Length: 165
Figure 1 (tube, rainbow, N blue to C red):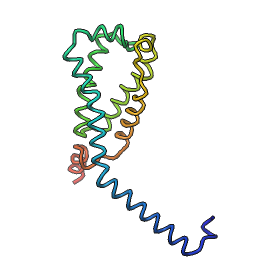
Figure 2 (tube, one colour):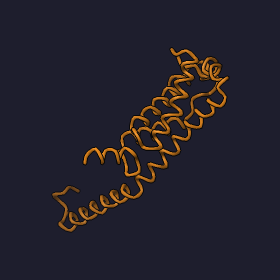
Figure 3 (cartoon, helix red, strand yellow):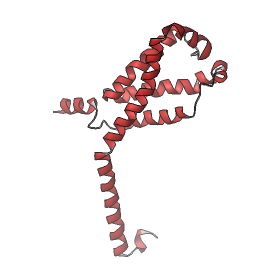
C-alpha cells in the first residue's frame, strides 16, 4: 500500500507508531546504551588484559610461544611477544576508561583480526587451533565500540564536553 492510497487514519497511525518507535530508541540509548557499552568494554577488555597479564607472569615461555605455537609472520618472536603483551595490557585500560575508546577498540580489533586471519592460518596456527569463531563476535564488539559516539560513561565524553565549553 503506498502513501497515496492510505487513508488519513492509516497515515496518522503510522506516524504515531514511528514517533513512538523513535522515542523508544532514544530512551534505550539514553538509559541502557551507556550501561551496555560499559559491559562490552569491561568484558572485551578483560579477555585481552587477562591474556597480557598471563604473559607477564610467565614471560620465560613467550619467545617459544611466538616462535613455535603462534608466530606472527614477518615479526621476530621477541618483538611479537613484547608488542602483543603491551597491546593486551595497555589497550584494555584505555577501553575500560573510555579514554581514546575508538582507538583502543580499533587496536584490539586489529589484534583480533591478526590472530584470526593471519596467525590462525599459519601451519602452526592451524595445528594449535588458534582461530576461534568467538573472534568474530569480539571483532564485531570492537567495531561497535569504535563507531559509537562516546557515552556519558566514558572519559572521552567528559574531555570532549570540557573542550567544547
